[in-house]
Length: 255
Image (cartoon, rainbow, N blue to C red; front, side):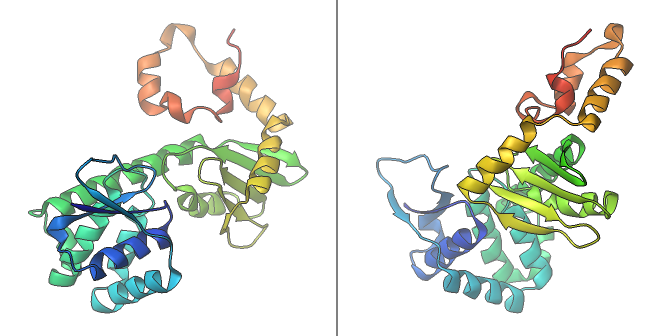
């Protein structure tokens, strides 16, 4: 078995798919995996594929023209998922798409399609969880910054709902894990920016600043809680421990 690996970004993943396709080794004899997720086996051959923008664009054009733009959007969405099988599943669903067209996503008799739908569902659940967990800090007048640490690259999916909620505010949602941020200038459209290590370090300092809105929210949360009705098991189902680091109400002393 030959295993092609790559970095965790969409262009690199498409480059890996291009290399696997052009290798002509046969899809039964290859597997695709993220470099940081791969579990190496003694009898497999591992080939690291660097990002190649030209190869990535070739895959994008082929999928958009020969299958459909909507199908490509579904693949790109699943490509945000940080799961061991995500890249390999995307590759196999893409092969089925070239064979059967965009309707292949409804053909649940194929195991890769079932896995693909499960990956997309879990990704959507993670995105919804963080839509509820974003907590902004006012770092200076009319500038709000929030930090999150998701498993997958769901930062871009938070742009539309918060642009709708806060259209006339300057705000930024920073993904501390994947070093990217959604930035929304006042009364304009949001955009995604990949952060340098220096930019991320500077932005992480903003969370140490206290503002009146954060303090008010802490007081409100503590005031409405009813000790006799606390249910920590149910609470962890809705807000797992790994997602709480930047949720301010879980970082306050209880009465």
